[in-house]
Image (cartoon, rainbow, N blue to C red; front, side):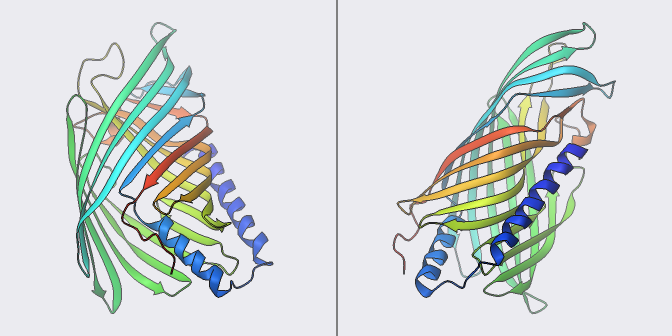
Length: 337
């Protein structure tokens, strides 16, 4: 992670801390009516939605590229970046302590960039219109472990492009609850990433959900996200924080001179800023995000290799982004109790 990316994360965390404690002094315990409304909205926003559609745009930015570990090449620029993403989550079977479901998704990524050719010392205009499909079968199970609540999940994942199949992957998580009260929930665990391209198959997981007396909620899930949320007015929520997200797609070649092969492009970004959600007619959530998008790591690598064995990578300047979308769930309750 470069210095600019670390700075973006630190600034976001500082702003979040200021936002919390600036409101702490004027906090008050809500009355029963407002507490019921708060509980209702929290439940509606937290439900995993069966259908989600969103659009992301990122402002133009400059970048430095490296091919086959050769010297850095300057003078490159991303002129346009946009993505449309559609996801669906369905639970087939729900029992007392286990759930079986599935997730399917589609991403269309459009990129227009000026790429400097170091041999010819001139720019090449590159247009990428990538289609990426994925799906998974998911199993979740809850039990007791060392007299504490424990939660386990497993997923079998398949992905690919509109031209060929990508790969099978697996994901297993295990968490144990260290604390669970009306105000605070803390879990710790491990993630097992079963993926031939992964360089880090096992890494730790930490989750904190804490309600402050002023109505602000800390929603932290490491290494995924750090958010501080506040319900506004009657049917909306504002979040401030940062989120780690990845984007992948497959390529037959990564430049005009390369031999046609099956390549994968993978990019990990840090999205820092504000997110606003509005509950519309109980079943719909309209949302938008704005802020700074910072590159953590990316690369083009042969499909049979690991992510670290990339043949092309870049360093990008942080840049502005915005995201807008809608989620729909026909199964949730439509009346407050």
